[in-house]
Length: 232
View 1 (cartoon, one colour):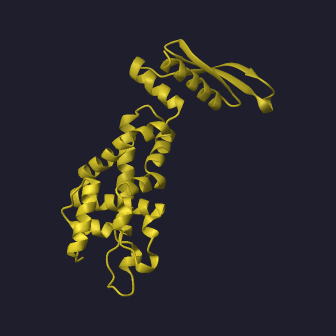
View 2 (cartoon, one colour):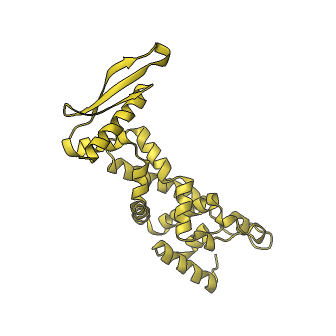
View 3 (cartoon, one colour):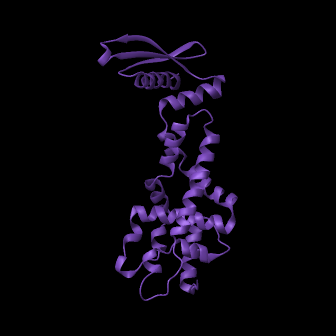
């Protein structure tokens, strides 16, 4: 794809915003080319970013899964999936894209001006940029780019976690063991039972909580324990 000098200048500007440098600038340009622009009637059909988006989505999910797997070794598959879906959600990706002003560089057909700033399109374009970087520089560079992004978002990743996860990590890192939850009381009829659960680490009771299910009671117990730990 031929790139004009003005367009090259714009792409170089985006590279600085992203903190990366492409060997093949055409890949970045393709990542920023919407189908409406590529297939518009007054132009020859140009490569657009849908295939790069597909690839970038796969790379992003792989790196996110590996990162969470290694960072949080004692979380369940369900918790890992929940965290990954938050970290790589459309909302998160569009937020990342807005920070580097990707919308300013997306090529769309004139009759669709403005769509390049819509959250869904920004998220898709960000994935396409990741796909382009993977093809241009390989997995290690793409991983570094994504992990740098995660490092900037570490606070938001932590906010996703619940008290059970926090407590589990604390117990593992501090005592090399896992918290144990135990039902110590049940009240009410079968159709409306309420459970009281206590949580222990190394036989020490750290907290307790009530809930209409064991799962909810465990969460309340973990919250109580975490409050006791952090207020020491």
